[in-house]
Each structure stands twice: as structure tokens, then as C-alpha cells.
Length: 287
Image (cartoon, rainbow, N blue to C red; front, side):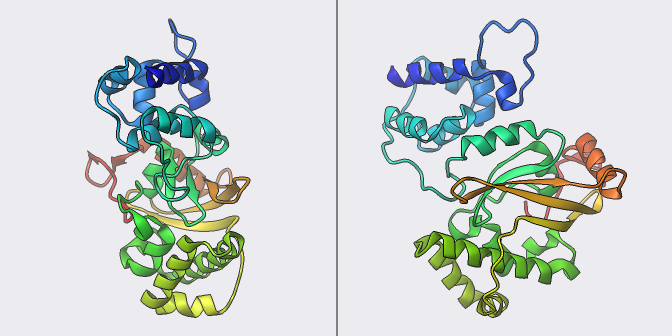
């Protein structure tokens, strides 16, 4: 019952605006409704209701991870939730199951008119807003090294279809210089050491670029993104780092009046519809 009480207490303290939801009329509860928490966590409303009533089967590790994000829990609250769910070992600090830092997630909730996502310093997607998913496609279902875009960039040619071929050398140099900075900041981190070791063996391009010793965190960039319905979209990419540098909030903008701005406006209307076939669901090279 402690798990149920804790979930109710966290739900009651969150206002809809805190998570990018409209308040709406006739709201009978000060915080979120149960179905809203379920939607944010990717769970069924019935399943979440059973959790709040102290019923149902013991949740898997993925459930408290999803609920910690939906309820905007800090690190201590997240760990407490795992213990109440009889899952004492929290997920790894990195990778797709990492706990998104609440400050970045709060900002992501408020970026509703521009594509934005939270990634790790190894370019693993942790959270996306709908426009980022429509622009870039959903993150891969892969785990381990393959979850990171840097790894896929140098090992999977299909991942490069997101950008025009003439831009590939620029992105390769930027990825490697950024990874050099991340490796230095993390020190002898086994996750980074393994990634670098594998990429040096599997990619001659990566190995050659790594030997240049170029170092530069990827704070801003100008990108051309190949979209299946809108064509090539030219955007500026901005990056906000978490305090420890291990997570980043990325968002995309275009100068007012530019073709890129017009394409972003169209993207917000089109959403995930496929203009080329009249069906829903865009086909992205990353999907």
C-alpha cells in the first residue's frame, strides 16, 4: 500500500501545465488525473489505476522508470519508488532507461512549438516531444552500444540517411571531437572506453578521426535534415547541458521568414502524417 500512497501523493502535486497538458474545465483534482499519468508513462489507464489501489502484479523495472519520468521525480524519489516497487537496484545512469533529469524534462514539456529531445552525452535519446519524433523519427529499440547515434553513425550506413551525403564528413568530425571531450570529462569510464574501442576496430573513418585528437563539445550546429515528406530541412540545433554534463536538451530552430521556418510550421500541422502516400506514419531513416 505504500507504493499506492506514494504514487497518489506525487500525482497530486503536479499541475497539468507542469507536464505540458491543458488544465481544461471542470477539473475535480488539483493534480493530474490517473489517465493522464498513465498516458505520460505509456501505460494503460486500468493498469495504473490498479497500482494506485495497491492491486495487481509486481511491476517490472520498466514501470517505475516510466512513472519516475511521468511524475517528474528527482533522484531520491526515483530510488524510493524502485524500493517501494521491490526493485531496489535503479537502472543504469546512462542509456535509454536512464532517469531524465527533471530540469531538462521540465523544459522539454514547455517546448511545444519546436522539435526538441533529451539525449545522453553518447547521443542516446531519452525523451522526445511530438515534433522531434515527426522530424527525426522515433529512437531505435536497440539496447547497449547500438542505442547511441554515435555508434550507429559509424557502423550502420542507413543511419546517415538523416543528412545529405555531402554533410557526412562534417558530422563525423563533430561526433568524434565531441566524444573526445566526453571521454576526457568522464575519465576512465568503462562505457566510453568500450565504445571507443569497438568503434576503432569497426570503423576506419572513426579510427583516423580519433587520432587527430580534435576536441569540441557539440554545443550548436547548423544541420540539414532529410525528411521523407518535407525534403531537406535546414535548421539550427542548440544544446543545453545538464549540470553534470551527462544529459543534453537539444532543440531546433530556423530564422523567421526562412524556408526552414516555413517547413517547421508545416511539420507542426502535418505531424506524423505521410504526405507522400496519404497514410499516417512517416518513414524515417532512423526509425
